[in-house]
Image (cartoon, rainbow, N blue to C red; front, side, top):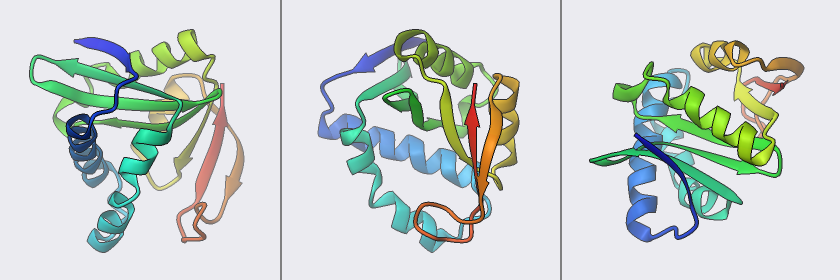
Length: 145
């Protein structure tokens, strides 16, 4: 497995990361309806292309996980469902901490596996909101190392 920062964000890479994103979200964000996933999916290319630091984990078949870091905040972290539990998320977080000083993340409270993962990695909740950034009824936890 190779973990690397990607500077050249080609359309084919973005398409693959959208696939990783959708697979990951459908496995972990069970509180979202199909229509909501499809609506959010429209914004993923912009997020992937706009984040300052895009880090991917890839094997011989291509990208299987990715993380975006903006300043010192982890803005996104998605792992293919079939690759979960293999240490990829942990490796990406460590890369973000070591290379970019990443020490904050916001996570959907209803994504209990992600909350537990970040807590395991040393993040602690310092703030909670009743809605997400778009005002939808999905509580967010703001966490810091």
